[in-house]
Length: 404
Image (tube, rainbow, N blue to C red; front, top):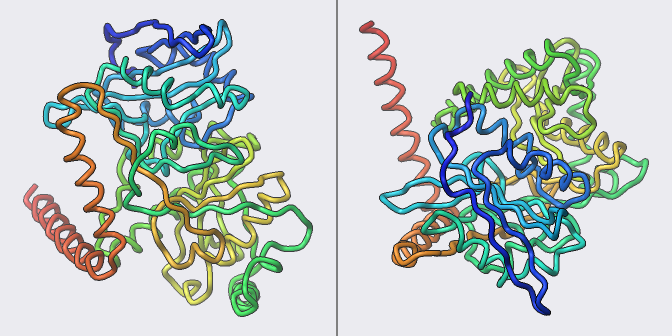
């Protein structure tokens, strides 16, 4: 895909710091213009997996948002880049909204920044920079208070709890299996029993990361089949079956073959020759984020497939030097075996008169969504309505296809 057309807002300004020093702040209208600096900053910087260059570029190349403007903000001290925030400018009811590129499919917004300059990225500095964006509102979703061991500079802007909670944990180094010191006895026993019975019924159990293009295609095919069945049971449309996600996953997985920290890795839980579960994840410098997973719907579904998958995956990650692990957004009971719940925040920064008028509406909408998601009765009702609408759409598609 060709990148979105260049615009006329590429600009340079200076942000004055206490003591009279200043930072250069430039807004670029293409990824190509900032790629060398971005990759250099990644090599020494702090960032979540969802703001790395390869993830962002693949998102745009997959046509998730083909007509949006790009506004990549870079702060530098002299020739040294110290922070990058990649925005796209979208229009919502006549309001120009700046959001982090890839936000609709990510597990949290952030920036790429040099930890040696964290104190420079103050609320005042960030506010001055955001005011230069060609937008009415800057809208950050699901901002965590920490990125690894560092405070997230964006969190200081303030905000309100996001609709979904985030699930994250530190991985403790060591040779003993993770489940030995982290899971209750009953859960450990269930995982071991499941693995043993899988081996008895299907053959040797092994978690393998795709190492060839053929294995990428095999694991993706199984994932899509398993996920489609699961979503059908839930009455949810399978967004991962669409062409954008297929292209996104496959491109990044193939590009990352052999890379110890790829932008996308595909793991399959093999029982004999059968893939009974999958895990798709992405890496930061010392962090792994499980993006999405799937499990078998046949005979193997009698066992704790995700428990076995995660027990093997987490130990592989620990052996590879990964010290942080998350299971993304969304409240599911099984996540609490492996991670703990954290509140993340939505941050809405108006930067124009129109933005100041629209900001309360956006905040209210997100607050209402959180109330629904965090109230079990309301969430069950919402899911029931969603399932009904999904069913109507599926029937309409089948009816349309039958008339062709």
